[in-house]
Image 1 (cartoon, helix red, strand yellow):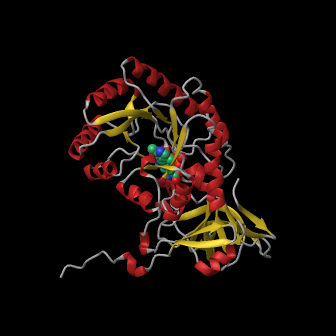
Image 2 (tube, helix red, strand yellow):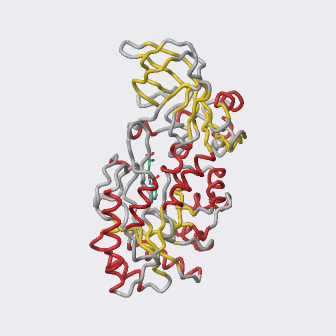
Image 3 (cartoon, rainbow, N blue to C red):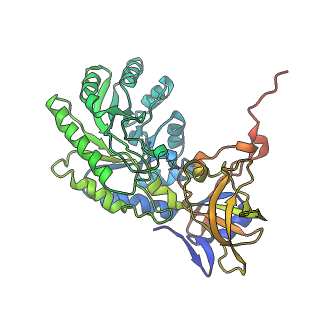
Length: 416
Ligand code: LLP
């Protein structure tokens, strides 16, 4: 459930009409609903019940400081994958002791920076990363808390680009090698082995892959205990899918309960979640304006002012996101359109074969754009990045100004 809805045929975010946002801040513009973010976060938190747990929001889904600040105020933790993301979390008021650091390629500098801020845990993805963290921790005179990401080799049944828990993916360590690698970690003097983690993919719409992965991790925890390696937290990663079109993913309640049920008798184990999309996707939309309608030989095109540089998911994953008018009461002729941007690529589309009743200068909303929308934006075609607005009840906050053309090349130099 989210707080984007029509009132008298006008699309609102909470108590603000989106046309007002478009008039004041222009388009393209991302709009987020604070109440929706909070609602989704609480859904995980509530369902975990009495199992000790920590929600580490996956910063990569949407790293705007205002969004991170909403999470920080909820008491959220954060899953980060770079020094840049850690800096954002700190700047937004996030608590570093609730930060887990994932990713296959952590640099010396990033590890040192994270150690300096005493993060909760490094989610380690290889043996060589263990060696590196041990070295950096020695120099810092600290013990680094670590967890090992185990690749459970389960099929998440999602798009191949966002499936991460299969044998041929670059992520984590193989289940068969996990005990050996844990023993190695345990032997290193500047590491403190505290956890185990996995993340099998994203936009997963069934419970089975999550439960299968969990069972593999639980068995491993027991096996490690036989080797006197005691695991204090279990990080199940993120990946819970959302409804873009007609997908029926489990509700965060069902997902969380399916996990906590399997933790019966392990009440001492801290459960960590790393949801990104499930919290943010339907908490945001992308506002865009129709520039031209064009009739091709085979197709009608609605050329809008947002493009693949603003929202790359349709181009990159053939992702389907709903496109709806801000004013549903306008008298227009209906037609089927490909909704495309101004970028010089055939792949520059936001939606294909959409029935819309539109004219130039009408506004549209691309729904479910709060996760992996702005976060994946680029300056391709020297286009400025969109503005971002956070709605809170009847208040509208500009949380990122539209980029200016001069900013595009302010750090470039012409050799003299
Ligand atoms: N934890 C780790 C270690 C991850 O790699 C990811 C996402 C998450 C948590 C959060 O997953 P989520 O709950 O959002 O599914 N750009 C793609 C999604 C890439 C996801 C990468 N990893 C998209 O737009 O569909």
